Structure formats: C-alpha cells, structure tokens
Image 1 (cartoon, rainbow, N blue to C red):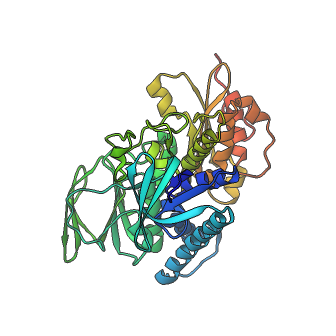
Image 2: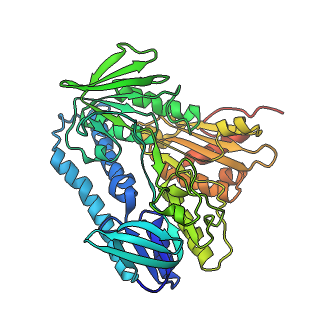
Image 3: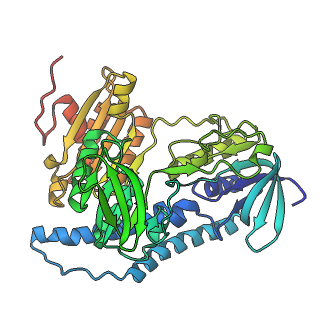
Length: 472
C-alpha cells in the first residue's frame, strides 16, 4: 500500500475487531491485520469462547450427577472426545466465520499475516499466503493481546505439559492432572477435566485461590472446588518437574505428602503476558514497560500520539470486555470525540460452578486503601429461587459508602453470577444507592432478587433474612 491508510488496526481480537468495526461504522477507511483467517483473536479461537463451550458441558455432567438428590438417576456418561472437540470447534468456527462476514460487509481491508514495524508510520506484514506487504498508516491501533505465561527450563513433552491453549484441544482425558496456578483460567479448565473424569489436583503458591476476589466469596467456590478435585494445595510451591515413562514427577514444597507425586499431564496456568514487544517497535518511539505492556494515556494513546494501544497489551485488567471498551475509547478519540478511559467498574467473572463475579471496590481493596465502608450480605440459603434449583451455595454482597449509601462494589458467588453482575456494574457506574436497589422491584422468584435483598439487609429490613441493622 503506497498511500497512507487513515487507520490500521493490528490484531483482530475482541479489542481489535471492535475498533475496526466501529471505525468503519463511523466512515473511516480501515485496514485490519491479523494472523488468523478471520477475526476473533485469542478469546474466540483459544480462550473465553471455547472454554465456555466446554464449561457448559461440564455443568451438564455435574447436574446429571446432582439429579440423584431429586430421585432421578442417570447412568455413567459415555464421553466421545472427538465429538466433544468437534462441538467446541464448531462454536469457534461459527463465531469467527461470522466475524469474517461482518468484516466484509463493512468493507474493511483484511490482511492475514504477521506484522512488524518498519518505522512509526509503516508496518511490514509477512503474508500467510506468502510474500510481504508494506502498510503505511496515519493512525494505528495496536491490539496484539497476550499469551500464556510459562515456567522456564522445563524439558517436558507437549503431550504431558499443557497451557491454556493446548488444554482446550481435549486430545484425551487423562487419568490424573495437576493444575499449576489457582487463578480463574486454571480453575475453569480444571473444572472441565474433573467433570470429564480426570482426577484433578490444584497447586497454588499463595495461601488461597483467586487472590483478586474477596475471601468470603472465594470460600464458597473453594468448597466446591475441593469437592470435585482430588486435592487443592495452597501455600505450596512446585520446585521440580521431571518427565519419566509413567508421567510427570512433580516435587512440592509445603505441607503436602507425599512430597513427590506423579501426574499424567500438568497444566501450567500462571497467568498471561502481554504481547507488547512487537518486532521493530523500538523504531517507533512507543514506550514498552519491562513487563511487556505498552504505556497509554486515558485516550489510549501511546507515547507516539498517532499510535494507540488497547486491550491486554495496554494494561490490566486483561479481560476481553475491557479490550472492547478500550477500542471504543480509542476510535472515538480518533474521530474527534471528547472521551477518556474512566470506568467506575469493570466486571470480573470466573465461569466455574458456582460462578464468581465482582465489580467496583472489593472489601479487601477498601481495607488496603483505608476506605471506610459498610458491607451487606444476603446468603442464598434464604433465596427461594436458589432453593428451587437446589443450589443454596451462593452469596451476594454489597460494598456501601456510609452516609451516602452509594454502592461502591458488588460481589456474587453462585449459579449464573456472571449474568447477574451486570446489574451491579450498572449500579456502581450510575452511583446508585442501597435505597435504589431496595426500591427496584425484582421479579420473583429469581436469583437477581438477592441484589435487592442485600440492600434490604443493609437497612435491617430483609423479608427473607433476619439481621437487624446495628444501631449507631
């Protein structure tokens, strides 16, 4: 491309394709560059979408076992791994194919290949079909995402050592598996394999699972995780891994016996690393931190004003919906709108069973920052809807600012928490008060009522849960 393109987007994940689509809708000529045949990025090809398809299957398997509590017995499931993998891949193909169609409908120029920087206004794309193509731009949005973090110096075959990408392939259902890392990715994938029949062990070097969420919420999920896993080892380090004929011999440091255990497969899930060190980026003047993040301002501009960065590569939290929000900010700023990245709440969801979701200020963050708060909790043991589905293992909590009654944060653990957290996000964004939630009529019987009833707990007037408000 000899002429400058008004806007080039590098990376077609949930941030990149959202940016390209919005820019095209606003009338900008757009070039979208990515290595895959269609947009979608890690999220759709190797992350959130395929993992949720498999988690749906895992939930179904768990419910068939749970049905015995209601007098309904199912036989042992027969798992066809090839068909299961085919279902997962069908979901991916349908969504990525749809994104390809939307790209063509918007008349976006899509270039498949791997890009590097020539200078601050030029990309060189090594085309997948062969050859190279220079792409000059007036504005660039970098949306190159992230990749799984790895443990160094491990000489273990890829059949034995998995990461979050290879684990989703489900080539086999191993008898035993160790999940290294007690974060959301490890717990989600561990849940899938446990449902399929694998004896799953989880090891986490910190003293509990899911450090980002409040302990009382995590405790509900941790109880369930411990019931479906062979063992959950916290405050425990992996100090050695060695592959032998019978599996991977893993040596632990901590209060665990035996110190060395053997696993058919090991899934390393210790986080993700941003893809900020794009080849040639040092020629542009764009600042990249030692961790691989690209430095951006509230408009998502880098240290080179005509180059923007969004999504995982632009900083925490590394979540798909944050990348999409980033994309809108960057494109609207390029279009001349007065915008800034300043959300009051970004939801986080762990799609285990039960699900765990939170947004805004957490109780732990308030304690660390010395912020005075009040906490209102509604246990799902008092929820009619939770009782009808035999899932009282839930909790809804509100973080409230004293005096103003403003809702600063919301946390939910339980069935469908990921769907319910949207109301909490809206409450925080709109500076809603506990009175607003209390006076909003919620359908009965629903799990969403627990948000209203948490607000009632704050005032000491919860119909279904007796907890008088403490007198000042």
